[in-house]
Length: 231
Image 1 (cartoon, one colour):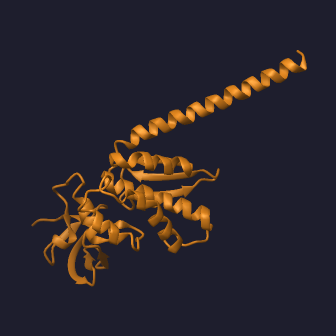
Image 2: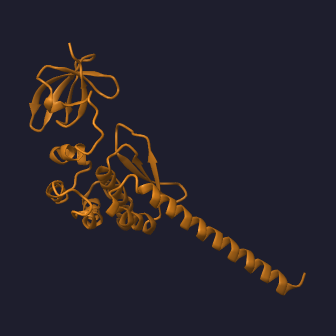
Image 3: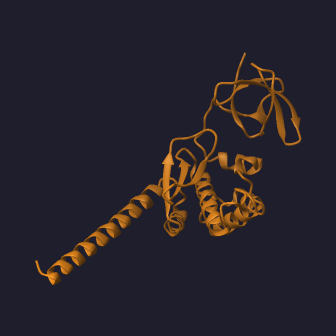
């Protein structure tokens, strides 16, 4: 086998492999875009895909976890994995996705020593979220609350009670669930892990609740969803 033929063969296979990889990436992005159509507002899909491609995000959509809506992890091989709960309504899904991408961008830009929800993340989240804050993406009744929230975004939109309640109106309703603020004083309720609590006094923004089994006092957000135990 002469040298020219060998080099030509190697070049051919390199081009073939590169083309195959490129076509696979395009195919994966097309599949991802079709998938996101189910979870995001229609006018937010293309811009979300740009953020995903630009930042090399591996997005996983998973069954609901009760402790958080999503998370970001830098994997051992250097890739970026973002996980978002499949059960979120499309507006909360979008906010969560951009929230996690903001972690990725902030860490890459400012280094891994910054606070997860510090000033660098807040500024990044505001910047990435701004193109979505328009009536073509969000209902007009949400926009004023979103504008207030993003003046100083919190670690979780759930801690912004007014915004959280406004977003919940787009959830699939669970007739067995109630909000803490709706419960009568002294009523007993069950949370996601089966533990029972009794509602007590309101302390500033949150409610003191006593765990029935231990007598320990815990603070609950007023918009926490729980199951009322009826007599």
